[in-house]
Every structure is written in C-alpha cells, then in structure tokens.
Image (tube, rainbow, N blue to C red; front, side, top):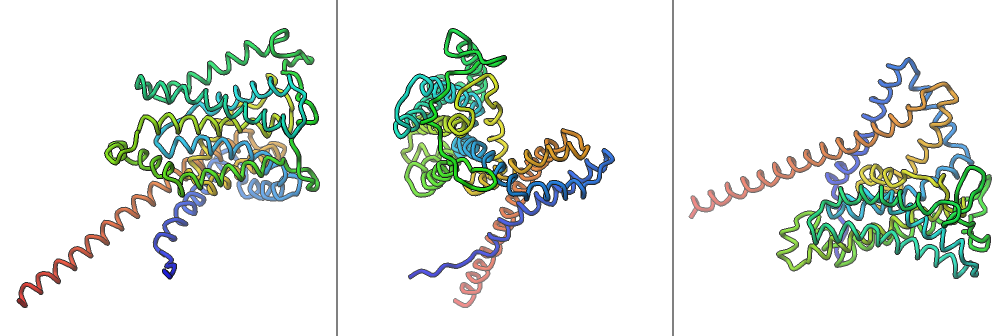
Length: 370
C-alpha cells in the first residue's frame, strides 16, 4: 500500500498566496481609510462584531448561495479559457421564464419545483449555448457575444414584463404572476432566522463541479483544452465540441443562480429582481481560483462584506468603503497568486537544474574512472 507523503513545499506555496493577498489587502485598505481621515482599526472591529452576530451569519449564508452558484457558472468557462461574461443575462432570463412557467401552473410542489428549476437550467443553457455556437461556427469571441446577449436578455425581459403581456402591475412595480405557495422552496428552521434550503443544492452543484473536473474524462479533456488547444486536438479531443459543451454547462449552472431568490424569497420576477450577481461571480471565481471550496469561502466573504458594509455607513464611513475593499481584495489575490506561481516555477526550474548538474558530474566521474 502506497503511503501518503506530504509535499511541504507545495503546501507552503499554497498557503503563501492567500496569506500574502490578505496582508496586502488589509494594508492597502487601511491606507485608503487613513487617507480619508477614518480609523481602519475601528472599521475592522465594527465589521467583525456585526458580522459575528447570529442573524448576520444567517443573512451571509443566504446571500452567499446565489453568489456561489454564479461563481461556479463562470468557473466552468474559466477552466477552458472561455470568458462567459454573460452569466448575468443568463440567470435573469432563466429566472424570468421559470417565473412565468411557475406562475402559470398550479401543480403539487414536488412536481412544480423541479419543473421550475429545470426550465431555468434549460433556458440558461440555451442562452449561453448561443455564444458557444457562434464561437465554433463563426469564430466570434465569446466575450463579445455574451456581453451583447446580456443586453438582449434585458431588452427581452423589459418588453414582456409589462401589464397585458406576461406581467401584472403591483403599485409601481411590474412582475410575473406569483408562484403558488405550495411551490415555495423550504427553509431550515434555524434561529434567529431560517437558512434557505438551496444551500444543499448549491453544495451538491459544487460537489458535482469538483467531481466532473477531477474524476471524469470530460473534466480531463476540459482542463486539457484550457491549457493547450493544439495539444488536446492532437490527442483526439474535439475542441469545438468541448467549447459548445462547456458554454452550455456554464449557462445551465447560471440558470440556477436566480432560483434561491425566486423560489425562496420573492416568488415572482419583477423589475426589482436582483441584477449584477453574474458579474460578482466573475470576481468570486478569480478570488477562489476556480476551486469549488475556494469559491465557497469567497462567496461567504462577499456576503460578509455586503452585510457589514451597511453597518459602516451607519458609523459614518463612506458608502464606497466596502466596494473599495472588494476591489482591493480581488486585485491582491490575482497579483499574489501570480507572484507565488512565478516563484514556484523558478524554484522548480532551479531544482531541476541542480539535479541535472549533479547527474552530469556523476557521469563525468564515471567516464574518468572508466
């Protein structure tokens, strides 16, 4: 039986990047706060105190669920060097169609809830698949097409989200008919506030993402194409097929982003439905390095910052303080991981060079002895 051997150097490098990023982010944020005449230590103490309260912890978890699903959707594309910038439009149009279907039907919850989720997944997959199809057939960059599809999705929703079409008027708002109460998603009976049951679905999707990438042939092919298209093509992998499949899977995951909000909170799609979660997913995928566990911590961190940011405003800190923190954190993480990666690569090259030189000296001695 092969014994497990811990690679200390790899472990040290793995821990060095996030620690370096954290220290740099704290230092830079502190300098920014000092420049505005505010006490950074007091700001951090307020955030930690408020974020540690029980109701805040539940709020952070619920907020992190759609963030995490959005990061997973982006990460599927990132692992193949595909930049799916359209997650925002994909989850919104998916939630819209799911809300329309859910509001038009009155079925038992055990049937209607999976049906609503299935509609969202299919619509998200189709909307993202358009970009993948255009890339492999016309060579159009997925960055351009997904951005344009975001605007098309918003315009499509705006057209149908009107009274007399697919929406009803409720005061100053327009929204789709309400989903029946029997089809509302469950919440965990936690205290003081309940946790959205979608936390289990998010965890299952994260586990599926990890398993797909690390334990399946498809995941191996996906990572291979992401590292070198020519090498993957030479080994028999259909790059075009992988591009379309990856974009479809990314869109399917994006379709789930709005479900915790639709089925667990608002129960309809209105013109006040949350937007921008898809762009947050890009930051979280970068922050979590496309790792299922890393993105979960990143989503919780973003939820923590969202929750405590309001408290800082009450304490007379600028409303942009938390947004600055977010930007600094992402920037520091990207830079820190790149610095550590380059250091590790140079260290590996130096080690290989030393081993080759040592072997060469041994060969020279052997030749002299002979």
